[in-house]
Amino acid sequence: MFLDSLARQNKKRLAELEQIIGYRFTDLRLLQKALIHSSFAFEQSQVGNDNETLEFLGDAVLDLTVGYILFQNYPVMREGELTRLRSSLVNESHLAVMARDIDLGSYLHLGKGEEASSGRNKPSILSCAYEAVVGAIFEDGGYKTANAFVRQFFIPAIGSKKEELLIADAKSRLQEALQEKFNEAPSYRLDLEEGPSHEKVFTVSVVFRKQALATGTAGSKKEAEQRAAATALAGLDELLAGPLSV
Figure 1 (spheres, one colour):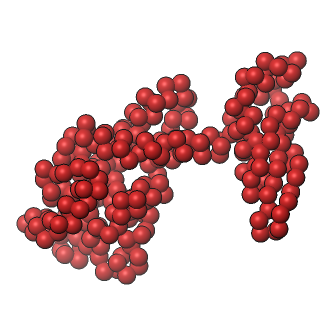
Figure 2 (cartoon, helix red, strand yellow; figure 1 turned 90 degrees about the horizontal axis):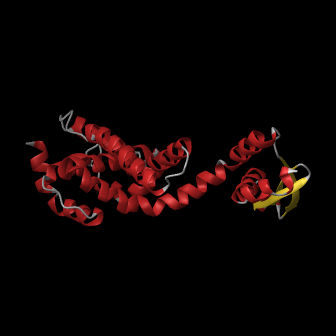
Figure 3 (cartoon, rainbow, N blue to C red; figure 1 turned 120 degrees about the vertical axis):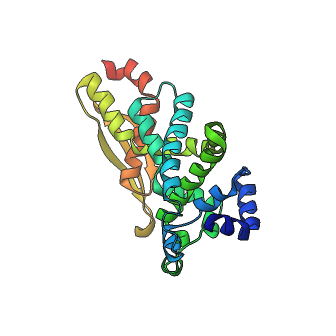
């Protein structure tokens, strides 16, 4: 059998990857299959013996496990925010980063064309392979095992992704809050622009009813506005109880 033979040939390398991911497979063929790109399977006349179905399974497992982790950790977060946070954790770019962290690309079996075009570093191939590995772990060890793997590798990333998401979404969230309370939107004021043209630093204040609510500084006006809005949101309850409510 194709997978049996390939798994025997690559037993040492597969054991290395098992060590990295912290899980030893009962059926090593599942891990081997997770590492086979469709281009390699096609060249070996083994269409169907690739990682695409495991990728499909892993995608569903990640949605469930990451969603459950967020549900547990952020019980008062809104559904839309939970959805966006989960999406930022399981999208192609972040999964590719996760794959690179475990050097997954070096274990893949690619066709000659993908090999020649740096397929081992393509986000699309890496993210799909990562999902396939998750799917293989689920198929081999069940939900509890897959959930433990996801927790091990994803929980450290949740905090930074949450902060990125909150900052990126801060302007719209602040506007929604102020419009809901006062039927008015905030504005943004450029306070300072300094530095050479290739390294500009902008300081921006978010203003509401002629009052500066908060200030943000960043390398672009857009990001400075987002940071100002995020800071304003952090103290919004106090602000709403103070001069803004007059």
